[in-house]
Image (cartoon, rainbow, N blue to C red; front, side, top):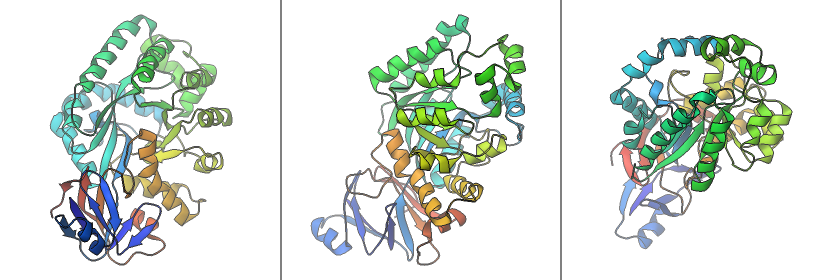
Length: 407
């Protein structure tokens, strides 16, 4: 048992002062340090520096670790140009990102206060790095493939990767399933994968309505994807439209990533099915895909969270930076309330979407916590200041274990 004594606790909806936290793997009690020492006289007491802030560890629900080598190889500004550059550089990027490369990306997330991440794994090349990560990991084995003639082989590869992830036996590692997108996965494969998801109660995610190209292809089998599918897959028409794709998930709450180009009918379907939208503002900007209409999501009570996506469409894996960019993008949103929403989106709301017992400094929750060294006493605009200023993260606890910093 340990007792940590910060100046302030962000929980994350309220700011507490003159309180301490008793924890081991989970948070047992929040009270004054004197009361906690009476309850737990043998506990180690950790006194933090002046203006220290204890808050929940951040949760990055969508990241592609396998593409962590990219810096200048891929083309930005337009989704289709980016996609062609991915295909052109794919083998080089994957082959040059070994376990050490992926571990560096994971370590960078830890230094940025990310205590849990959702890894979208296309090839399972990141399995070893994720299995050895200090963070909690939801390991989304991705299913992709639009050609019916290849369905059996593609599904067999997917099952082999999923089974390999199930053999990882360590605290905080959760095998899961990702369906790549409506345009890239055959309906037969989606149905087969969803049977497994439902039978084994696995978490599920999918990319949805990321680009104008996807919108036009799913609606009319036209647009920038027309030439792409003809050239690479000899495919003239889409496999299904957006509504048919969403229908597969009607009874399975899913984390849908991007959703920038969705229409009102699709958003209503998303709401009715209890899906969660993952907001990736930097990726959307770099690939020229637009800005997620968060006001519309809020107006319709559609849950959303925030994530970095991968280094194939971002410059760093830092949720504080991601939240700052979102704060700037949504210029009409009330500043302080929206900053608070963003922090919730990276903590307790992300935990809820992933079905994890974390994301809050609260009794009974897992002790995933970070210590931030503020420069002065916080005020009512703390949420904004956390996003604007790169305060030092001096300690990171995951499941009660100190994984960054010293005591």
